[in-house]
Image (cartoon, rainbow, N blue to C red):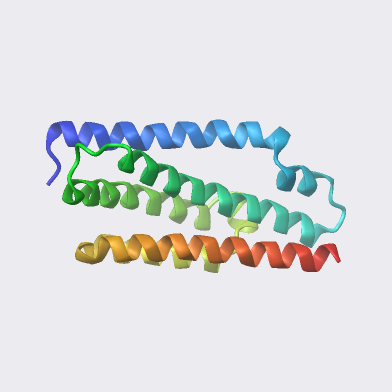
Length: 158
């Protein structure tokens, strides 16, 4: 169970990740190759792939950044880091749920990818004793999905 100061750390770290990623998406809207290419692509399917690729990468950055923050705090034990990861996983899962059900993003995103990521996060929360294994599984899934988008984009560009 999280203590009061641990809870504050989790919330503060989570908000830091969200803030950094909002700033990143803003900056990337002018400077990122995939967004720029998507905005200027005439082929609708390729344009959609560019945006989907960027969004999957952006989601991956949320998770990776939280892991970096946790790794930079050696004062916390492995068990505490596990609790922090599970705390963040619950809210990260909620974000992905809202993306798959509402708004323009639900039409852009490939639902299977988000559902697979969400399932892995839910497994991490449910089977917390295997949290590290599931965390690594999530990292691999995110990398796999990124590679799939790269292949699809190359296919359409040719």
